Length: 197
Image (tube, rainbow, N blue to C red; front, side, top):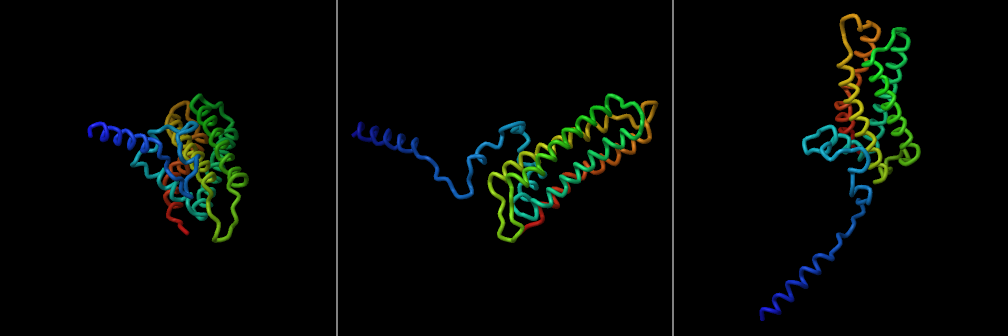
């Protein structure tokens, strides 16, 4: 009797160990591991409202287009800052140069997101169009990366002196304009997440 119970327990354990979950129509191998690339695990915390808003926005065509609109705005703002600093005609300090380099990365990421729409996320503009899993994951990764780059640029902008001998009025105005647009990024993602259907 003891051996029978032990044999049944071993068989039950072996059968449970070999069970493979049935994939649903919404699952994708790309969704299994969102931590590939340069995305850190702690960035996906339970309380991060911006991440949740981006995920919600990417589930609808209106939200996806809204995110793209703000990505283009971020890109234009970064380009405008870089050109405004060059037009100031002053020698850029180390802090300003770091912000210009951060903006170059932001511009590159924005280009990647815009190219995703035309290459990976080819969508019809009718009401039946749906965001594919591949498009969702790749766009989510890139937009989250952009959010982190924008946060870094904001912190770099705070290091630029606002007064004193190293502060040019022209550069200060360009930094203020840039940070105003960059700080609105999380709230804009929340606004995009409210566009459903």
